[in-house]
Amino acid sequence: MSKASENARSFDYVIVGGGSAGCVLAEKLSRCGRFRVALLEAGGAGTSLLSTMPGGVAGLLHHSGLNWKLRSEDPGLREGKGLYTPRGKGLGGSSAINAMIYTRGAPSDYNSWAQVSSSDWHWDALLPRFRALENNQRGANAYHGDQGPLHVSDVEPYYRVSKKFIEAGVQAGLPHNHDFNGAELYGVGAFQFTMHKGERFGTRRAFLEPAQKRDNLTIVTGAQVERVVIHRQRATGVLIRTGRSSHEFIASKREVILSAGAFHSPQLLMLSGIGPADELHRHGIVPIVDSGDVGANLQEHADILVHYRNRQKDGISLGPKGLLKLGGQALRYWRTRDGAMAHPPAEVGGFIRSSSAVTTPDIQLHLVPTRFDDSGYDLRTAFGHGFACHACVLRPQTRGRLFLHSNDVRQAPGFTYDFLRQQDDIKVLLAGIQQIREIMAQPAMAEHNGGEILPGSTRSEEELLTRLKKHCGLIYHPTSTCRMGKDGDSVVDEQLRVRGVEGLRVIDASIMPTVISGNTNAPTMVIADAGADFVLAGT
Image (cartoon, rainbow, N blue to C red; front, side, top):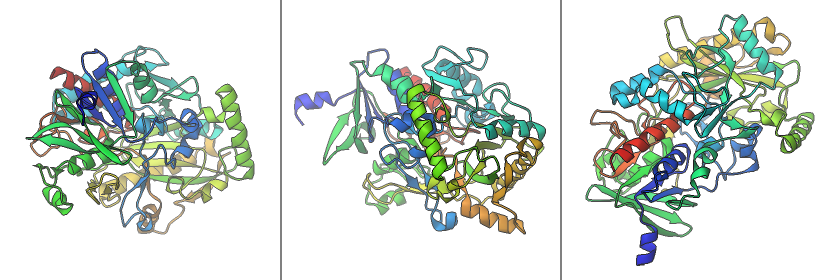
């Protein structure tokens, strides 16, 4: 490498991954102008017509240009096919393909993090960060901010079945919760979304686009990092692949920060020699740090969809008439930014308790005005007229694991979730199904409820469990594979520094000690906001 090119690739901070965490980090670390920051993203710009349009979420589930399209290797789930796991690929990461729901989880989630790490992760310390990042349509109050870069909006439910679901939930004895990010999580209601003026407003638009004009921020797309370069137990840069060539981006002055998410951050650590020694040896990788928890502790929100026929036939259908209707709504959206395609499919839902002994809700519901199976890989159900309600286990006891298939970063890592092995998780999921059935039996749903299709009637709990294993899925919230803690076995410490190597941090959803009780996008941004302050405090 020539002297000129070496200088061009030398930075104070090199951030690996331009997803939700990476965008927040790039903006905050470059803001003062003192530091040269590089943001490296394996995908592209993260833009498409579908990613702008809120109703285009379903089309993004299988968009190869914006999605890593991973799948677990659980032999006992979905008849051995495992669980499809979409992950964002490109600037904005999963915030460019997700359902845009803005929830934070429960205060107790963060207080439990603080117990195993430090007071920096206590709810009282993080709530001001949530407020500072928000530009909430409702204005500022004790729980929300209105001066931040991230637009958070109310979206009046479009589908009649969504409105009726809230009404039925109240009839079933649940409170109507007007703010899932307010004083109480429990109840049913409409979600808020990371949207603005009828368009998706992900982290690329909120954080990265305003920072792109800065001379001290370099953004490189199509740059897949092969490994972290470590010299004498210190990270000095990363080796990246662009096309057929590889070269180094140097971060010898400050730090390398992995923000590649719950699958690719632990994969990169292992490819760099940080991970379980036996696993590394198996792929010819020389261990630099024997860290058994790298890739372990994988958590997700196990989910089942309860399907119903729709008597009113007023939802989303892929039949000929339904497709014609969707086409007309898409044209309307591009002209006026309103109509069905200006609305996310999961408009409403709830947070409920599996039993009276539970204080903080441990089940989340999402109502969708259509039917689909296997994350849309099986679209046969969507040709009819129906709707469905997700029930997901918010605080699973099950722990999965990520592992390598190769020492080549271009081969996706393997992973298993091991869902429906823990009896406690099964009980919570069954309680969720039962409460969905109670909601659907209420008078408000009578005009829509044409009968349950899946999982349907069963003769025993064992038969029901067999059916759940065949049809279970995810809410797409993987976390915790590089868990944070103050114990010596944790992958990163309380300030997200990788144990055993200087100048290296992991800052993304993989550091969560436990998955939060809700959608993970907003917490990932706050992790990055706190992580950036830890980085800057060390300068």
